[in-house]
View 1 (cartoon, rainbow, N blue to C red):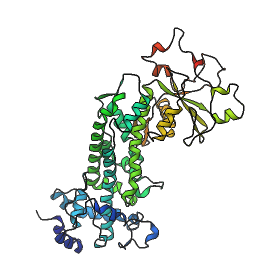
View 2 (cartoon, rainbow, N blue to C red):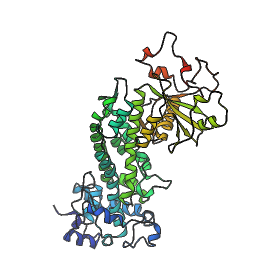
View 3 (tube, helix red, strand yellow):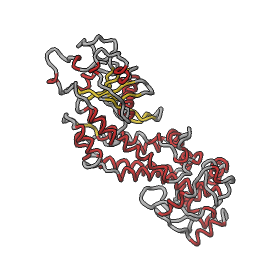
View 4 (cartoon, rainbow, N blue to C red):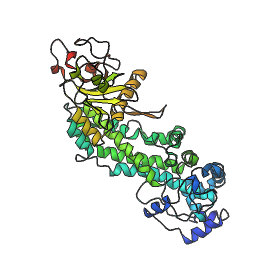
Amino acid sequence: MVPLSLLFLLTSLATLIHTSSGLPYLGRTGISSLSQQVGNASDATDCNDLSWNLRPECWDRLDIPKWLTQWWETNQETCQEHHATFSSCFQQVAGIQQQQCDTIGDGLCSFPTNLTAFSPQEAYVLYSIFGIWQWYFSMWQGIGNANLGAQGPVGKIVEAINPVKPSTQVLGEFLQALTAMTPLFKAPALIGRMSNTVETALRQSPGVLKQMFPSGTLNSQFVQVNEIYDGLSKIQLYYQANLTNALNLVQTSFTTFLDFSAEGGFIAPQASLQAQSNILLSSLQTFIVSSCLSQSDIFITLARDTNPHELVINGSLTSPHLVQCDNYDKHGVCSTWWYDASTNLAYGLSSLSDPQKNFYDLLQQLFENEWTTPPMLFAGALECAEYVKNTNSSNQPTLDLVTMQPRCISNTQVCVYDQSCQVNDPHCEFTGEYGDVFDVLVEGAGELFGADGYDGSRFGIL
């Protein structure tokens, strides 16, 4: 078959030259040199000068959306006649052969180091094709390289919390917890800015959203929570497959590509992607922590307008032993409490089977090992409780398709201290505004309670 680049001979003289000589295939080595070609606006003053750094703002300054739309209107029919998708066709016309930027795998998509051989518009589109591929590849590679076995963080989480209930969970819930954070990832060039190209593009591209978040996936498969690492290899494979399908749709559909590449959001080096891909694992680990706590009859207690340390030092406690808090550590933890100064809320952990247990050591393990963070575990659980209360929804981890916000990554039961209770009133403890802890956790644990029911005085009341 005649190369597409020859069919578009009149489009660009550079096209013919590159097609005949062949561009070097850089593989993984091309990424580092390519990163050097991306910089800030101060590095150059002319978007047409490709000997300087490419800049995200040049995407609009060069009016690339209009230019690219005209290119596609002119060339779409020929591309389709040769069964070439948008990204593949554009690369071939530019003289770049043997690239597979519409699928994911090591070394499948790279970029020539000499951008000056292309027109400015060509260079920015070609870079965006690579940048989008790189963004998906980063997440694909990150989860693929994650140690989700019994000897990794997940196994250690299970060992530390040691869930006591022999219960199962739907494996699909763990997949949802892994993927629900994705729309929050900013396109790499837009990190630190208000705009979020990825979220906007997902809103406008329901097909991509469906590929990344297929409903019902793994919902027929169950796993013991205390053996969750046995099922995570399936989650890795499903998530990687979802990413591959989503990337393929973005790169093959012209309109979807235009949405994702808006504002030059992918004109950025690979280095800026790693921190974001780590969020995926933090999300999954937080859900595993939350699940293990729930399966151990451990729930979150919340005291509003309460600073535990202040209560100890200002003399307002008639029974100081109830709140043992000398000072906050670097995580904001004091004894069994985490204090969120931004909201003046104090969170703790309590156990149905051992109400007097101090969870300081467990919290230290969770936060020191970065298995989760206080905001993700505690504030996340409160947000989930509010969401469930206000929408009458399930507390399963999910992506809210209206707000594009992840929901219920931490879904441990939250119980709010009722500060109107009289001290030592065994029948008054929690407000019950987020449900009754006993309805949620006590199933199968009836032996913990006598004939007279639950004695609330066993819990220390603030």
